[in-house]
Amino acid sequence: MSRIPGLDIGRKELIWYGLAVALFAGLLYVADLDEFVRSVRQADRSLFVAGLLVGFISLLVWAWVWHRFFSQLGIESTVSRTVRMFLTGHFLNGVTPLGQFGGEPIMAYIVSDTTGSEYEPSLAAVISSDIVNAAPFFTFPLGGIIYLAAFGRVGNFLLKLGLVTVSLLTIGSVAAYLLWSDDDRLGDSILSVLNRLQGIVGRGDSVFDSLRESVTEVAEAFQQAGSDRRFLLTTGLGSHLAIIAQIASLYFVFRAIGLEPTFVPLYFLVTLSTIATLSPTPGGSGTYEAAFAALMTIFYPVSLATALTAAVLFRLTTYWPGLVVGFGAMLTLTSRADEDKRPEELQ
Image (cartoon, rainbow, N blue to C red; front, side, top):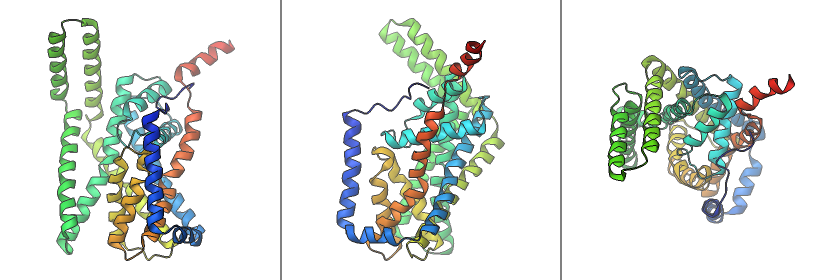
């Protein structure tokens, strides 16, 4: 693949990079840089490596979800190629301000080009995978809050968080239903809007015909993705293993810096801090560490420097390795069209 879309860096992107660096520098200043460096140096390396290995499993679980949807939509790809495409997407989301959402059209192009599949099913597969992979970050907090309400005590903060989680989960569920439903409601609504726009514009019939065809094909691909409810259920349940891997990784990080990990704080720290990755800074850098450190001081009586150390080490076990491997994975991807040309050139 000669060129990967999404790597153009302009003034806007540089501003967000600068903001991420400034946020992190501000955190270090407030937290006491000397204490932060001392905490990092004193971390147990063997426990940190264990956290690194366990944390990488979460990326493989999310790639597995991609592979499941590829199979469901008839997109031919080996497990190795799927993992490399997913890690490429992880890299692009990390080095450009695409955030956790918004990079799907670019990744759909990469999937289509790499596998030789049509763009529409590739887009449906990527978006469907992202929906399923995002769901655990809402179901886990909600499940934790329900558990505390039944067997413990729910504070005002968690109560408000529960309401927000229910709202977001409801919105996401409705969106998923509309995308995967076979009643054509969403597709028909978009087609109706296009028809009205065409009537207002009064020209560009070929453009609108092409748009209508694309909308119809995308809608059909989404319907195929959601046609098997058992497939959606098993894939959705499997995606929760990624969060379990991250909780286990944070357990090793806490042990590495001499903290006694307890389940409830680990559970909520992993799931709640993820919301900060939705910021426009590259990969949520800066905002994630700030949110994680702030949450940790709520659950643990530790200094901000110690909390920031845990945040940085946790990102080093679950996020940054994926960027390094993702860059290498991106370099290995080749266009399916280029692969098909090679045998002809050898003849």
